[in-house]
Image 1 (cartoon, rainbow, N blue to C red):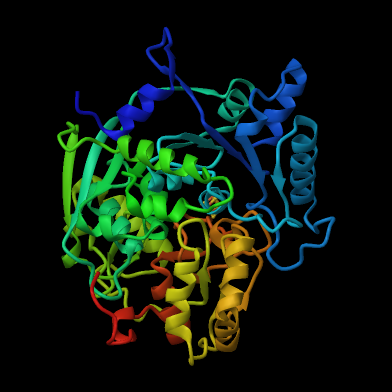
Image 2 (tube, rainbow, N blue to C red):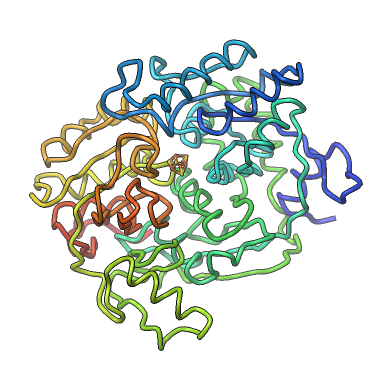
Length: 473
Ligand code: SF4
């Protein structure tokens, strides 16, 4: 019978159906980091349990680590305690850890794919919401809470509710200056931040088929912001080409066998979906958020909503968001002054993101009123970017070039907004207080748009500063 990738992966990993109606799913890969694991390991110790599959568990540090001064002990006692706890736990339980002294350290959702740990047909779990990123490879990847981290450490299994599948086709061609970030922001705008509750999002269509793996990761990363439990793209030749030769990918003849199996896990052509949505990619323009959730966005040439334009039930939320952001109803987002420009996070800190942004800033200077920083997603990306001279392009323009980590995506490390600063950010969440200041304001956009805003000192349409040589994709 024809099946979706979700169904195939689910069936292949089902241990049994629990009396609750949930499925006990085997987890192929468990990625851990410093924030959501200390309590889980404490519980294992209290119960005298071991980690069931240390060989399927890998650790890195990302959320709390400083991106500038990494001397130990860290100045922040809480960060030092979390870091020390992860080091001790990985040592005691036999889990590999890529710490700051290791060339593989980076944001957990960046290093999994980069090292070839993330592969098609897998189930993957991590104590971070944006684990959906790994779905770009045709994996079914869940963000989980601390008690589930404990469960996976102890049993390598999760109890999961079944999911419906919504197929989202992105058709046409993206115009120059329109990126995967704009596509996913538009999907969330159209379907809503809760529109995906109970669903897995399967992305396809010509635009997604032509995307690089970096772009697919950006799409899947933000599935969770649309309420979907997971997001994925069916594995294809692009997926296999990305994985070939990566340290943890199958090698030699085993790679050929794996590639055949990966393709067999893709959704069948006549698979049945619970819902279907089509987005016209050709109609998209660069998107910027104006509010306090990723669904509150508009095209860069558009105007913010007026309460009269929205359904009665949404009016108060719109008024609250406009008030928090300091925007007048119906005003334009373009020319909004910014104080900070942040290029980083597991959504948009990969080498292709840095290349796109560097192409914009090359030969220009950051506006004197803007504090701008670039934070590569991993030490591997930082090394590759330096080899290409991207770091120098950013430095010459006045950006700070930092070490790998989550940085200003969230306020758990020294990189924070101050007061009511307005930040053009390539990250994934614009919630109140997300970037470390309770009154800080976040405008989500693509890395190229952040780069353009850093130079201009305000929100600008990146299409106006792009090279005319760029073509539609
Ligand atoms: S970059 Fe942001 S969203 Fe991604 S793992 Fe770090 S804190 Fe979470």
